Every structure is written in C-alpha cells, then in structure tokens.
Image (tube, rainbow, N blue to C red; front, side, top):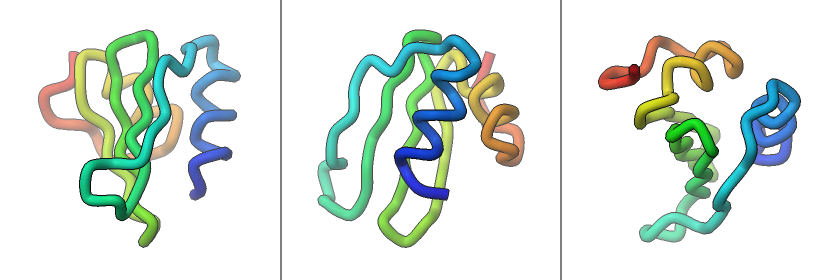
Length: 70
C-alpha cells in the first residue's frame, strides 16, 4: 500500500492528515493524523502505526493491532 492510498483511506474516515514528511533516515514517510496516530510507511512497503489513535488507523488500514494504542 502506498502513501497516497493510506492518506485517502484514513481521511475518508474523517481523520485529518496533519503532517507528511520524509522520515529521518530518508527511507520512508512519516504521516501524522489529527486523532494522535502516526504512520510510518517505508519505501520497502512496511507500514506501522503508533500513538494515541493508532488502533483506529490500524483497523482502517487492515494492519495488525498497534501496541500502545488507545
């Protein structure tokens, strides 16, 4: 799943994208959403969600349950 599709799926659920930038390593994207979730999207296709709203976002993206989510 690519960055554009992730943004489309999450924002379609009414969760606003608040930040999008290349990660510190330069090998993927960091996305932040208004519900407190952050999603890391690697150029290799790996996806991980973390933060307060991670459980909701993980469910929208059909990812395994995010540890530390609310």
